[in-house]
Length: 300
Image 1 (cartoon, rainbow, N blue to C red):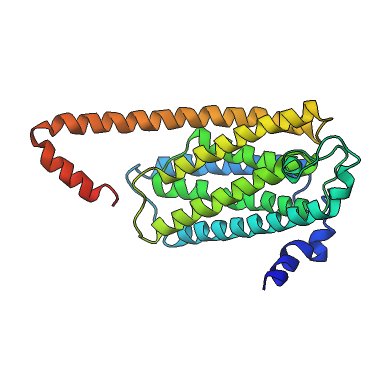
Image 2 (cartoon, helix red, strand yellow):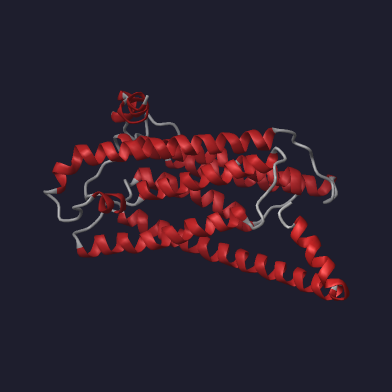
């Protein structure tokens, strides 16, 4: 069973012989990337504006099981990518360890996860799964339309975040950027858990007693931030890492996303605190009964 799984996820000829090519790989050109992001932004803004004109904010459009199916699909695809790139990374480390002796950049598998040797080309196992991850980013875009249809909500952060993540995954392939293997492992692990949780709540099962999705995103951002310091260390002190121009550009974009997310995170907690203070003041005369009621319904 395990050998068969490793073959289909890491040793199949289509995976081993993969090569990122503008003529052979779907969606691999700059024109396609720009057009896709432009169409996404225009379609989202148009849909939101149209619904705001014809429907009141309190009216929601029922989507039935579509969001649940979407969440389950993203969760399963992310889990497959996670296992596939993990097996592929192990195979690449096994096959290329001999080459490390000729470079001064890396000497351990963990360093390879952070820093590709100079001259690395976007071909082989891990870049196949990086390409699958890039394509899966288009599936994530549908969640924006679900949010607009169900809640009539559209924020700059969500629109910017989805567009930039698509852009970044393209740059990983285009410039054979270092750190992408670890970034994909962290991201797909998060997506498999978060979208699995969204499927769980979409079918009517109880949700967590805390903002589960937001806290998972905080963990991912913290791990990425720590890993960036490792990339910088290897690049400047051990001879250079591949694709550092794209890495620098992506780091700036990650920084913008981090600032926007922290701003959203702080506002969310301040809003929650204000609501709790208002509830506490209005119910001060019956605090004991209110406390028992909140403990009974806090996780519902």
